[in-house]
Length: 141
Ligand SMILES: [Zn+2]
Image: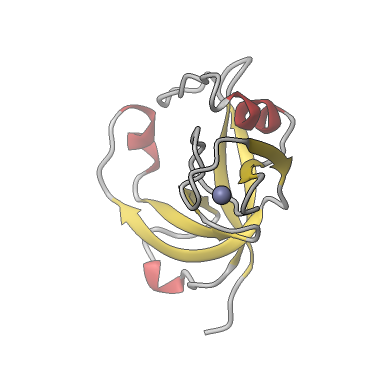
């Protein structure tokens, strides 16, 4: 089935992320001066303004920081409502927004903050694989 949701356009700045995504890996940018990870990709470190950023392969895991249930959407996303968007506290630092799969948007009370999540990728086209998240270990309530 053809991918029917919006597809981002990689740029020189974000290409390392998309190259990793194509191989099922989460690549993250890290400052070579202060060593802190930041998301989204930037030309300057948001913490110390250093301009040399390196990319590394991250664990692809993090903890659910918060979520929201989406009841209205357009295009291909309309078929998935109610779906869940999330913020993940990445193991390596900073926070990434995404879509959380494998949870029930009709029962938001069943979704546990702090649950361990793993990144996965959907192939949108030859070059772009879209990240989403899945709970792999539910936090105790
Ligand atoms: Zn820095």
